[in-house]
Image (cartoon, rainbow, N blue to C red; front, side):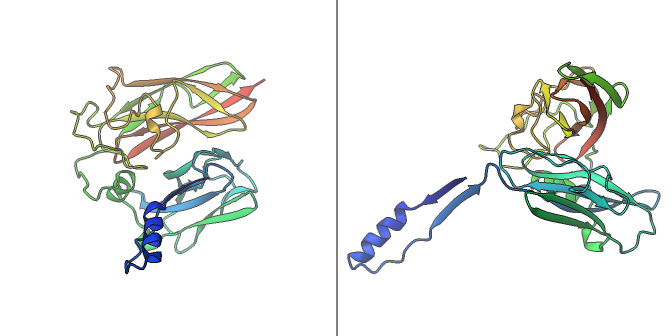
Amino acid sequence: MKLWVVLSAVVLAVAAISAGQNVQPPPIEVGPITVSSGLNVVPAFEGWEKNADGSFNLVFGYLNRNYDETIDIAVGPNNSIEPGGPDRGQPAHFYPRRSRFVFRVKVPKDWGNKDVVWTLNFRGKTEKAYGSLLPVEIIDPEVIGANFTGSTTFDDNNKPPSVKVDGPDRRTVKVGQPLTLSAVARDDDDNPKPKAAPQSRPPGRRSAMGLRVSWIQYRGPGRVEFDPPQALSYSDPRSDLSPWTPGWKPPAVPADHKFEAKATFSMPGTYVVRVLANDGWADAVQDVTVTVTP
């Protein structure tokens, strides 16, 4: 655990008081408190969207309370969604910190006031997220953009990016054998002119400064290594580790709009890898299921 506390001013104030001076002690400034590992994951209900056919999407994300530790919770008794579960498309591989708008659970237009409940049990703690159609929970592109960027100024002309995986959405590969993944991603402004950037990047915020594309692990019994390295999570401020998400400066979009990575799997089993395209205000995803044999 890292803990920073500013004490020098307090020490000086105590010394002055002991010398008989009538001074007001300054407030104690406590810096960020972060825990690297050892904590649990909390599911989060982000809100709901209405579909053109009258049905609704209940949108969920999560908070991995650890600053560095990635956690796996297999779909089943410890990672379940009801009704209709336990599997309703939720992740089983949880990146550190906050990941927003990760998946959607579709419910019919006559859903009414019932709840969809996502339950996570990990390290002796049970956490639940309750999704419902409360009017105050409705979300739209402006709400999503504000969550990604921290800005309340929304560009009405912005359109979400699109992404499509090259090839089938089910693959088979052997342990240790690299699997080439490719996706075509497009945005309404793929090569924007650079804008003035702040001196430092606000943690957890993204800027609407061009198309960003990453391959990430969504499920699986082992670890997936990507070459080149990809972004760590949906909203991780360290996403400059990815060549497609290099911080404030927009990447040059490939001429063929193809974003490739090689994935290598550590052990046999069924995995889901996800390609995530984000333009700063909105995102699009597509999943690939991979059966890994010995």
